[in-house]
Image 1: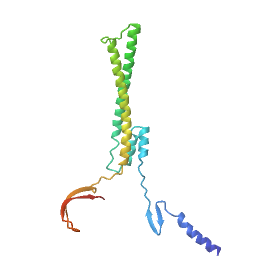
Image 2 (image 1 turned 90 degrees about the vertical axis):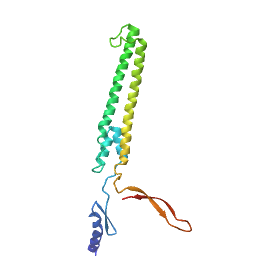
Image 3 (image 1 turned 90 degrees about the horizontal axis):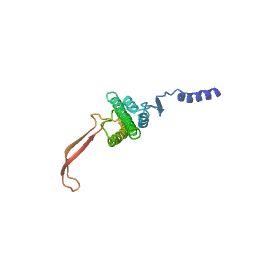
Image 4 (image 1 turned 30 degrees about the vertical axis):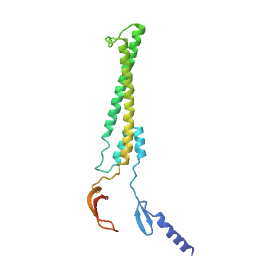
Length: 195
């Protein structure tokens, strides 16, 4: 009797351990599990925050074949960051040179060759101009950075978005017949077609 109990218990437990990882057995019907990994908007945003352009590459890899289009944005992102960074640093260096020129003129009464055509007020105006441009360029660099993060987040929402020909909207004339004492009428019907 003990042997039969053992065989019966083993017979009940064995199907549980022999179950495939890719399927679930419910009421005798085998249903396949969804093995597709969901694309994460949070991951795309974090990647883009950590390394500019990484969110776009992450989105590009997750896009279905034929719709891949996110990788081309990476050179534009780095061009925007590089250009604004380069000109911001250049304006900062010129601003420091103008400041030193003004100090040399007022304290040491020496004039640099580069700024001989400018008087003291001209040097101050140039200094202020370079300072303003530097600040605006740093602001522009921050704006490019934030735009690429927003782009990665928005594009991550649309990675699996279906825009096939099966989705459509049609406007057609419609005739509404007599019903419940109301007269017949003519109008427009709006027809949506989904997959």
